[in-house]
Structures are given as structure tokens and as C-alpha cells.
Image (cartoon, rainbow, N blue to C red; front, side, top):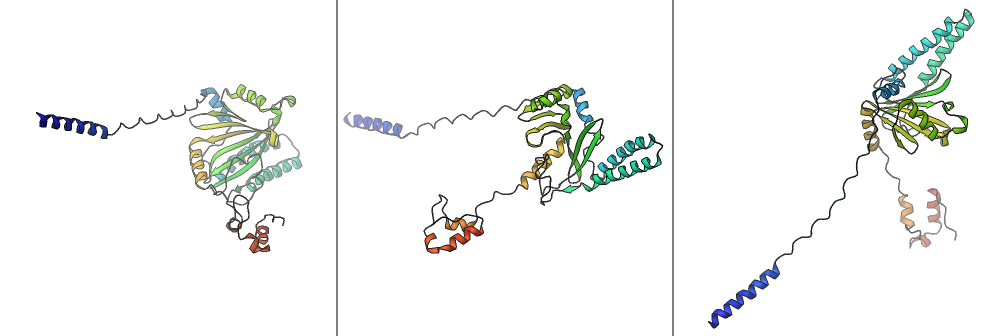
Amino acid sequence: MRISSILFAAMLAGGVAYAGDAKKPAPAPAKKAPPPKPKKVTVVSADNKKKLAEKMGGFKFGMTKDEVIGVISKQLDQKYDEKIKSTQDITQQDRYRKDRKEELATVTQSFVSFDGKKTGWDVSIIEDEFAHHTEESMIERWENSNGKNERRFFFFFGNKLWKMFISLDVSILPADKKSFDEFQKVMVSQYGDGDVDPGKLTWHTDDFDVRAVDKLKTYDALGFVLEDNKAKKDVEAIREAKKPAKQETNAVINAVVDKDGKDHPDVKSNGNAVDDVINANGGTPKKK
């Protein structure tokens, strides 16, 4: 009996020890924050989509530069043929023919390829509409018709038309109400509701997107942009891939100046050599 009691007590002690050695249950994983809800896109009616498409002006996405110029040439033929027929003056008729030729030449000569060389467009009303080293190019045309002064920019990607930016005549707004809020009201009255963001009103369709953009503060202008949805994805992908890396401070300067602005231990021993390095890299030497 005594031996049995001792064995039983030992078994109980072992059981307690075993239970104490058991692993504690792992804490429950933290709950992940729910993904943000997708932004609700305003539906464009069939009638408003048709009205927006009319702003294509007879051009189609996917056209080459030569095809776009061909359409412009035909539009100029129609424009100047009407003028020529409106007069019997031979001299005036010849002047109209000369004007037509010069206008087409101006469009053709406006071609620019964004291949890294600085252009006059890098700081302009269309500065946000293109990137360099991404197979993008452009031509422009003044469209002075129906009493309005508008300018159309044709953007190509891989020599295929994918976007048009129209600089609208600001006279569509009252002189005393020249603001984006007023511009937005005018656009909504013509094309219906769109998605509103700061300085931008966007209409999304299955085939193309249209943006009304505010350029009043920077260029006293208003923009109307039409984009091919499919091509836009390819353009954005190559822009991301070709995006220049962030520039870092010159390695020589880093070697002699700590990031906290204090002199490196060997600065004083180098004397004027450090100032020479800083000067060569556009910096200003410290006063002694």
C-alpha cells in the first residue's frame, strides 16, 4: 500500500509537470483592415457619351501621324474651298490657296518627339500630358471656327493617336465668373454629371475617358482631354518603367560632409580642398 501510494503520488506529480510544460495556444492573428471601397464611378448616359464623342472632331484613336494630317488636310480643303467659292476676285482666291498651304505646313512642322531633349512644351498648358523617353510625340493645330479660338494637341504613343488635349476658348465663361466651379457648371450642363476631383471633372465610358481640367491659375486657360482607355494603360506602364531614379547627393560631398551637416573629421586637415570640391558641385563653402 505504501509503495502504491508513493507511485500514485509520483504519477500525479508527473502529470502536473507535464501539464505545465504544454504549449500555450498562439494568440489570435490581428484582424486586417478591410480594403478601401472602390470609388463610385458616375455612369454616363448614351446621349452624353455621343456628345462627348463629337469632340473627337473627325479623328479616331489609333490613327498614325500621317493619317491625322490627312484628315486635317481634308478639313482645310473644305474650309478654304468655301472661301474661294465665296469670291470672284482671282487675287483673293490665290491668297486663300496660299493660306491653306501655309496652315497645313504649320501643322506638319509642329511635330515634336519627346525623346529627352528640352522642348517649349515642358513648361506649358500641356506639361502634365506627356513624358520623355516613352515613345510619345505630338502635333498641334489652331482650330478657329464658329467664332471660337481653340487649340488641339494630338498625342501619339508608338505613332498611334491615343489622346487629344483641346485648349478651350475661355470666352465660354462670363468675365466676372472665370473659375473652375463655373467651368464645371458649363460642362455638366452640356455633358451631364461626371466624377469631381480638385481641378478636374472626369467622364468615364467603355471606350474613352474625358477630362475637363482647370488651367486658369497657371495659364488662364481651360482644357478638355479625350483619352483612349486601352492605350492609357500601356502609356502609364512604360512611364512607370522609364521613370528616372531619384538623384542623390554627389558621393564626394557625402564623403566630406556628414548628413547631419557637421564636418567630417578629416575636413579641417584637407583645408581648401574641401571648399574646392563643394564649389565644383554647386555648393557654398562654410565660413571659417
